[in-house]
Length: 346
Image (cartoon, rainbow, N blue to C red; front, top):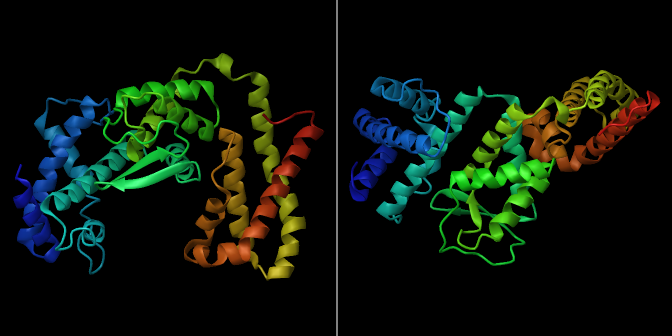
């Protein structure tokens, strides 16, 4: 591997003209060798990798190529736009060689971790939902996200012992043990995250800040392990039956609310059939998450996904009140339907 000065020179040449075949080839070779080494590091940290024979150099090379392909993708008129969009504003002429290399490695490493997670978990919706949920929690009032050498770090605002920036960062194994313990004690993600940071705050030999990618990755792996080892006794037949009936009754609750409450907003705000459809899809996904997992993501996300490009401009001014009202009425109606059958949701 080149020293920082040579590595930074390659990056700057590539950013200056990513269309030049020579610049692309040299930068790709550096990214390839870095990724190959990083895969081995992740393996020593306990990551599950989609490689049957780790002694096979060809298998590792093939995995490296697969991981880098999306990163080097090009859009119309924008070669390698993911790389250039991230690095160009950070690798300006005033940036030091060390900073340029750090940002490039952080970009590649973050991309590799994301791609590996998607490959291993098969892009399962519940894993994506969990990652989003953790990010939403740690971007809330109780946490302090900050960027350090291209990596997003998370610190708990209520730490009793103050920042310990000179201490070492918790490793995957130590964090895994804490996450397992907190997840066995608490059922809701906000409580689990808080418990992790409370425990870390008391471990004075460790820095009380965690890389966000590590927190998300360890939670995904730990909760998957817990799900695989959960015994049938932890889920009672009665609870399973309630969830089954809740899924059946959810459609009725949504229909009732859309016919009554949404009709009012149609008149007041001029919502058309297309908007009605967006509300139904968003509401269905929210209720599905609540029934399956016992909690849902932040309310705006469900509707914003359906609103698309207009979400940022119109959610607060047009939809916030109507959406929150529809959700509240729908969940209340679902509870009424379950209570009418003599059941109470957990």
